Image 1 (cartoon, rainbow, N blue to C red):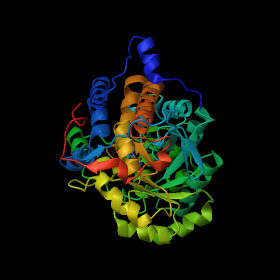
Image 2 (cartoon, rainbow, N blue to C red):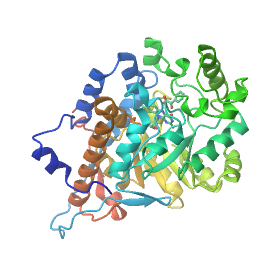
Image 3 (cartoon, helix red, strand yellow):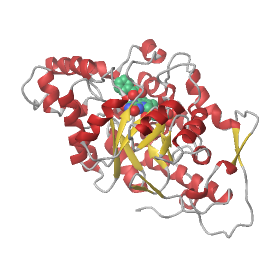
Image 4 (tube, helix red, strand yellow):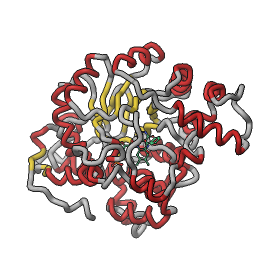
Length: 397
Ligand SMILES: Cc1cc2nc3c(=O)[nH]c(=O)nc-3n(C[C@H](O)[C@H](O)[C@H](O)COP(=O)(O)O)c2cc1C
Ligand SMILES: O=C(O)C(=O)c1ccccc1
C-alpha cells in the first residue's frame, strides 16, 4: 500500500486540511462547489427522501461497546473479500456520471482508491469507458457493476470487456429495473442521460452502435449520433424481466465472482444463494429508488442470518463514518461501500478529495476497531453493538 502513515499526524503537521472532516461539512462544501442541478442529482433520493433520511438515522440506533486494557498493538483494518485484497473494508460504491462532480470523474476516483488500497466498484454508467478507468490506476483493485442490458450481445460484450480490463468481480444491479420517482431531478428538469452524459461504456461498444443503427464505433459524435446514443441507451439500458435464473447465463459468460446488489429481504437472499451467487450487497440504492423504504441497515441482520456465512454480505446506504462501517460489520457485513461521500470528495478536491474521504474513513475505522478491542475485522460480532435510544447526533454534524 502506498500510504502507511497516520493521516491525523499529517493533518496536524500541515496545520489543517483544505477538506472538511464531518459528513455534513463535506456535503456543504460539495454543494457550494457544484452547479445546483448536479448537486441535486447526487444528493437526491426518491419522493420525500424518507429512505435517505432513514438510512443515516438507522446508525443512530446502535451504540458500540468499549473494551479496555488490551495489548495495544495497532489494529489492522485490511481484509480480502472474494479474492480481492483491500486496505480497509470500505469500498467505493458504483455511482454513475461522476463528471457531474469533477471533469476527471471516475479516473480520479480510481487513482485515489489505488493510492489508499481501496476497491473501486465501477458503475455501468460512467463518463469514462471502463478500460480507460482501469488504465488510469493500473495497480488498483476494481469490480464492475453490471446493468444487465435488454440485448444479450451487448450484455456479453460489457462483461467480456470488464474481464479483459482486469475487473475481478461482477456486481449485478438488482434494484433499478424501473426509474425511481426522483423529485429533485423532476424539479430541476435535469436528467444527465438525456444529454448522453454517463454513456462512456456504451458509446465505446460496437454492439451498442449496431443497436443504434450505425455499423461501428464512430470516431467523433455528431449531434445526431448523440441523440441516437441517448435514445438507444434508454431502450436497452436494463432488462426489466431479469430473473434469478438468468444468473446462470451470466455464469456461462464469465468465471468472475457474481455479486447481486440491492438485496434487502432474507427470503430473496436465500433464493440467490441457492442460485449460486458468490456474494450479496444489502442496499436500497442510497434511498434513490423507493421512498418510505425500510432503512438498509435494518435489513442487514436478517439477510446476514439467512445467508449464514455461505457467501460474503456487503452493505451500503447511509455509511458516513468509520464507526458506521464498524457497526455494519458488527451486524454481519464483510465490507461496506460509500456512495455520495466519495462523489462529494471528488467535487471538492478531485483525486485529493476522494483520497481525503478514504483516508479519514480508514483512520477512524482503524481507531474504532482498536477501541472496541479488536486487532482485525475478523473478530467483530453483534457483541460489539447494543441497541440504544435513537440519536440524531452525527447525522446533523
Ligand atoms: C449519484 C449516484 C449515482 C449512482 N449510480 C449508481 C449506478 O450507476 N449503479 C448502482 O448500482 N448504484 C448507483 N448508485 C447507488 C450507489 O451504488 C449506492 O448504493 C448508494 O449511493 C449508497 O448510499 P450512500 O450514497 O448513502 O452511501 C448511485 C448513487 C448515487 C448517489
Ligand atoms: O442515479 C442512480 O442512482 C442510478 O443508479 C441510475 C443509473 C442509470 C440511470 C438512472 C439511474
